[in-house]
Length: 299
Image (tube, rainbow, N blue to C red; front, side, top):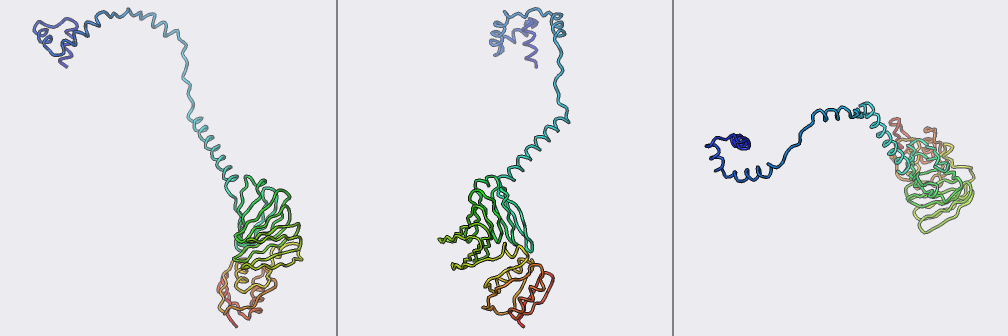
């Protein structure tokens, strides 16, 4: 601070002889002298204060534009809403669609081309909605009945085989190692491994453990659509699995496996009658442990 005061007094020629002698002996004196030399010729022009004030007052005052806080929140909420709509649309259109039928229930729905599908109990379907009309392909786990609208090739892919059609009505069932396809109208091509089978109205084919069985169908649609469970040469284990699926129950078998195969129908809406038919056929007695659990014992 003392140096600053001395510098100010020196610039204004206010130093005493002793102070001036001391200041000139300082190591920074030469630098200060050069600065004073180069700035002495600079002169500030006279400031016309009145003219400056008149110029400021004559300028048009423009109020700054402000956006009310509530409008900012409206804009922000609108942007979030539009973004949410975009995400929801993308999820609905581009993410694969899934349709399921819970145990003991059926699910009916339409595909984007108005093809109709009914899923049997304990089944599910996956398909892509966004390019459906150019790629009518879906994946099936379980059993479903299809009424296909006319159009491009229609494919049903299962873990056991594939069914290809153009427009028809058919049923596909893929459970464990068994692959069943029945044609109720039109024609379908069934692919199982290296084998290809063409089915027409009233024809059916079953593939089980590599074996192929051709059959005929006389009904207008699958029996399960009318609340009946239809079996053809079925072993008791698979039969009980299907009853569990249709009634959403658990069945334990306390009996030796039997080689007897069951061909016939069971009701899908009358559990007591279904249990009586099974018990009579295999000489078993049904015990209801709870509303959701049945035990079959040998008589």
